[in-house]
Image (cartoon, one colour):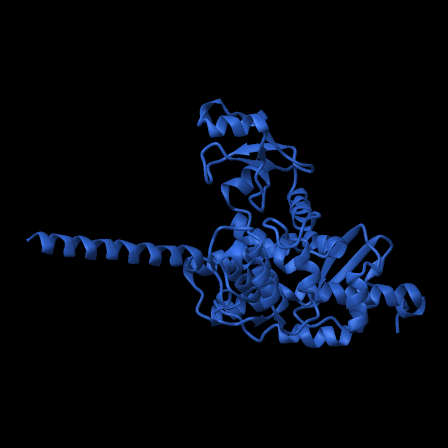
Length: 353
């Protein structure tokens, strides 16, 4: 009888373990309005990048294409921008990006893939968020090299397309926490949680304060911003700060290592460098694939360096970029910068033909 009891207990434990693993998987991916997997759709962008040329891409990463104070977006109806659209891309301190990103095309694609009900409704919210914030993401990429595709996909995920309680209360789109002071750390160590208040946490400009919300702990404080644009700027600070490559929390190496313009990039070298810290072997990120699109490698880089605890964080980011074709924004920014350079060196290129 005792043997039967322990066998039953073992089976019950196994059932709960299986349920936990299933729930974890469900929480990670099944709730997201994405198409799972890496595809060949980004090859359209590779063709365009070859037309733009390796020299322009190199100049972009070397900071030789100049910085515009403002970036605006104009759609060309889902088509790759042609020379007519590109010729007036620079206007004083404003860069106009004529983008092939098209909301209607993406929505039609998702409906053809069987999106309906709540999943389709959430996809429409995601598309609306991209339409609203793509300009500021392109601005940050132009000025600091952080991929617009990565920035928007992280914002979509971290803020639930701007609908999370943290985002609505504080404009915090990326879940960036305020840090406890030395005095606060002592209180936390002593478990004096009820003695913690907002003044015990430090925030960085352009944050204007903190917001208390339960995350890992009920006393957690998150940075608060006046605008979504300020939240994006703070995110860029975090992802570009000076740090030692190979250390946890260091992300600045990602943008020069996994650059727009590459067809497939091998993530193995950096994955091996971070393996002891991340617990991931190179083949663990994308189901055995180690050569992946640049944005998937960049997403893996975030995971390598410890940006998030979710085991599928990098896949969620990559699948968001694939599903909503955010790579188009990266490509079209480079096209706009190339045309702006042509226009500045050859003013007649701006003249109507």
